[in-house]
Image (tube, rainbow, N blue to C red):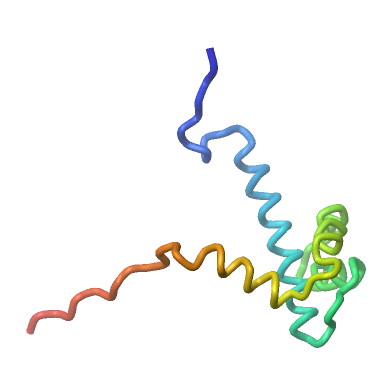
Length: 102
């Protein structure tokens, strides 16, 4: 008999998954800031320095190294464009509310 969880937020490891996503986003944001600042190919040490400057006492160096490896030979703009292409058909908001009657 196998248990099926319908609510992923109730899973015991949900907090761990959230922490991993936060670290990944911190590292991606640091990498992006470096690229936008004119550094086309940031190093792991540079990403770590930005994360630390942002207030993180102990950045996840393994995650940063994985990001740097994943970005080898790639341009950030091309990676972003590819991601946008994947989500182009996802609804992202609705129409504005109706005006008030007067």
